[in-house]
Structures are given as C-alpha cells and as structure tokens.
Image (cartoon, rainbow, N blue to C red; front, top):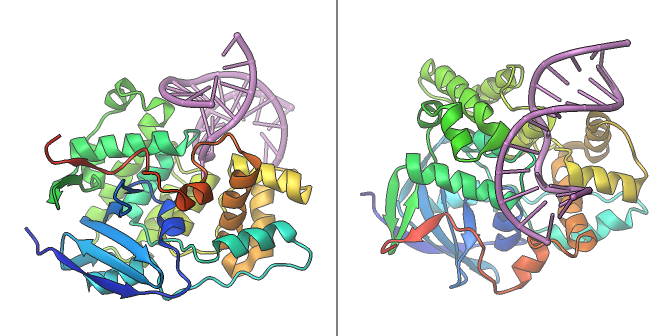
Length: 317
DNA sequence: TCCCAGGACCCCC
DNA sequence: GGGGGTCATGGG
C-alpha cells in the first residue's frame, strides 16, 4: 500500500465547502466530524479548512493524473485550482449575478477525471444529485478497488473497462432506468480509444469526448457534453443548460428558447469565464427560489450537517 | 395523484 | 434544424 501522508496548504480566496459541495463532484461529502472526505484519481483524501489553511490527509504521497504524476500537495493545488481564481465581470445592472458572484466567488471547479466525469454526467440525466451519488457509489463498491484509509473503506472509481463489462440488463435490474445502455456504451467507447493510446493527456481526452459526442446513444447530448467540457476538459467557457438554468433564464433574464440558444447566449455573454458565471447563478437560484429543496448548497455549507451520501463506509460495516 | 429532477433520443415536418 | 412525445425511477 502506498504511503499515507498529511500536511497543510496555504490558500487565499478559496472556499473548500463551496468547491466540493457545489454539485460538480459526486464522490465527496462532509462527514459528521466536519472533514470533507472523498476519493479522486485513485487516492482517498480528508480535507478541512480553517481560514486560510487547509489540513489534508491523503492515502498516498504521489498521485497519478492525465497531466503527469504529482506529489500530494502539488496535486491538491492543481486539482482544487487553488491558484486559479476566476474573474467573472458582472455586467452593469445585473443584480442577480452580482449577488451570486459575491457569495460564491471563492468556489472553484475541480479538475475532475474525464474517465469519471463521463459516466457521472451520463448518469445524472433527469435524476436528482443525491440519487446520482448513490448510483455512482454503488458502481464503485461493486467494481472499484477497495482502499482502506484511516479506519474507513473507500472504493476507487471503476475503470472504463470495468464499466464496459457491465450489461444494460444488469443496470436496469439495479434500477438505473434509461441511462443503462448509455453508461455501458460510453465506457466501451472510452476503453477502445484508450487502448490505442500509450498515454492519454488532456488533448487526447478532448478528442475522445468530442468524438463520443457524435456517437449514437452515447448519452452525451448538449448538456452532458458541456458538463464534461467544463468539469474535466478545461473548457471553462462551457455552459450546461439544465432545467434550473432554463428557469432563471426565463425568470431573471426574460429569455426563452431552445437549450442551444440559451447556451450560445450564455457562453457569448460570459466569455472565457462563462462556466463560472453560469454556476454562480445555478447555485444562487436554487438557493433563493427553491426553499423546499433539501440540497441547497449555500445552506448546507453554512450548517454543521453531514452529507446524506458519503463515498465510503466504516471499515467495520 | 401529480409533478419534477444538472435530458437524450427518435420521429416527423 | 427545431418541436413534441417517449423513455424510468425516486422523492416531495
């Protein structure tokens, strides 16, 4: 087993809770002890922020990524984009965006693994985030590699090869619904393309996903593809248009139209930071307009509650 | 019971 | 190339 390691990071203008709780990543959660716990790039982490410092514990001293191997601390700075603050400019008079940005400007998009991001957002289609988390954790438990860390049991995210070995029938039996064939097909496609590459870096991953987007029944429509672009392919200008985005476009901007039209409008308006601009509004709109919603991000981060779904189990359990 | 969730896909014009 | 129906599942 790799060496466990721990340490402390100095951060500035960064909010760990908003970053890991924004809804981007499905396999992180805040435990009852106040620590954010999750697994990324095959490594388990415990993170806790106090002011300008983040304490960390990691299951390994080195992490392997599509951008090379990194020491734990360098990895976390890269993964969390600690030194890459977004610079969203609020157009004059846009009070909603101003409020949203002021609240959320310390959030970051993390550099999610493409091989995890693709199945994650294929599974997210017309399903609440909590349900998507359950399904992803289920897949990790049955197909991932078990990793014991600090008295808890984590499972790495399944490889495309492992997901590709599943069948549509199996997933339907486990109540994955209409997403079942898409998960299997997209995984098989990734597996095949990866097999022909010695090493897949960012450019290779972009090419794989861009092609997968054109494949029939891949599960990658406009919205899912934009999520993958934004969350794992460094395309920070991408704007995923979902049901919430459509609502605030209509209610706050008096904009109606197809998803594609709204997407083009938002990407043009936000420029290189359109992804952050949209995410600010997404989170803020859900916060203020949906008071019955149980998974409001800002409310949760300001509370002391534990996440309803965590990516690990007690080792005894 | 009805409505909705980080929609995709197929058919049809 | 855009509009409408259909696809399953769980929760409020």
